[in-house]
Image 1 (cartoon, rainbow, N blue to C red):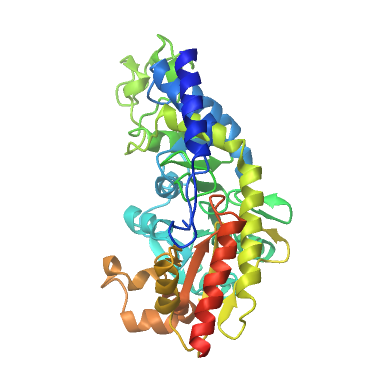
Image 2 (image 1 turned 90 degrees about the vertical axis):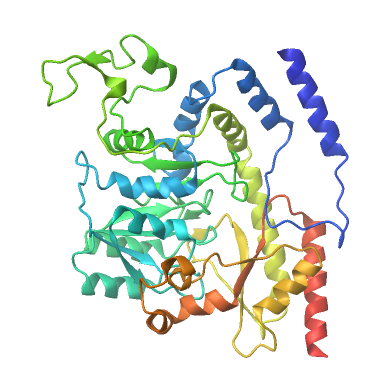
Length: 439
């Protein structure tokens, strides 16, 4: 095996040494995996060991990762979207909060759909609020109003937008005052802090994504970080078909399991019948497990998070400097005074009255091989999948800032695959665009 791993290392190093980038000919990707030979070597080693499903590597990852979200416990899952679904599912468990269908959940109307979709999928009821323009986060005045108008609301969930949190002091005051359960979507926010505290540490649970665009990647993958062992067992059950067995990895194949009581009278309706705990089901669950190879990638990527964060912040500062030359055209989004975002991306909003549209500048950038993205779905209730759930005109009038970002906000990448040469090129192309519209 050592000879094979050495060859893999040599191959990746040689391949990386030949990488080139030519401005205007090669893409400035908004994101991508920040890999060196270590990820490939560890992944190949895992494959050669022959254990494909979650095992020793996953156990290590699930132990080491939760503190990055300010928690002690958590579970590796197959995507950040699944992580968001599992957080809300956990609230429905009879062994936990046991929230019924129809439970009201306060959430911003703009963002990525899988922050909101689980509310519909589980049968909860969303209570939408608008966002604020400066941070793109949920409008806390609107949140407080929603709490007053819906005193039966039980949950609040939102994403820290592109790694940038809202005013968490005020948010937590609202959570406490109205006795809400906070679920944090940290899929874009790994490494970000507020008042020195890691995002993810404020809520009952927190999610993270390891899609290649995010801060660290396992290809696909996500995480649910939780506060207590009971919640961990509930989330684990929903992740694994609903089974009650909570033994970990290869240990659950042992005759007695790691709990020592694998074969016991586990089923209440059959009190005298011994049953294998691996086939006892506590929840109506799913299969949302990743594989062992992904955990191997995650363990290497975790070691690079600080380096990745420094590069993302540097790229953000470079782009902010470039766009701030044109305050008459662009609204630049700001961080809260106590926050230190590990920026997922650099957002920009076209100001009202500008002599161009978002499509004009984005298509110009794309024509020059610079990738752009809109602010995800914008106002999600205007997307085709949600047609008929709300009156279109009411959704536009009731949430004006969400509508503004739907039509006028875009973002560029801050990923570590972008370097100074590429941010300089972005600035040059921006200058060319502005010069052309001023003629």
